Amino acid sequence: MRITNYSRMGFALSAALLGTLTGCVTHVDEPRHARVHTSPPPVLVVVQDDYVYYPRYQVYYSRNRHQYVYLEGRSWVTRPAPRHVSVEVLFASPSVRLDFHDAPSAHHTTVVRHYPKHWTPPQSNPNLDEGHRDDEGGNRPGDRK
Image (cartoon, rainbow, N blue to C red; front, side):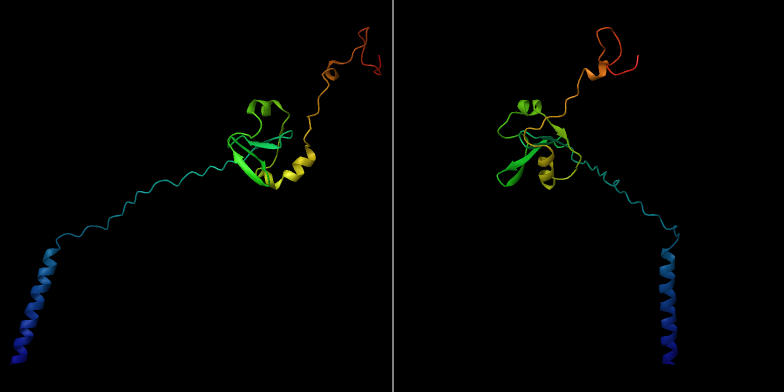
């Protein structure tokens, strides 16, 4: 008889516990979708270096960075102003735009060979485009009349 009393008591406690737990849940919501606010990915802007070279002073100018690059002793330096020459004098000297986008040190040997210290840009002859007319208003010498 003891077994039946414990069985009835266990059954009653289980039923009460089950009723209590189910009584707490009156309404079940649909699962909510989590809203995660993230910032947009950063915009990566890659700016390639664009160099102008001044052969007389062996100075490179990065137009994008507004920095001068040159050899100082055995080391390459980058500075906001050239050394031993004013910006006005530098800008008034012959220069050449270069077509590489990495460090000048990687190209300096070739650049110096193509543009030695006393290099000047080829001058165009302004009279060449005017036709070189002779005194009588004719065509260029050698042209058929």
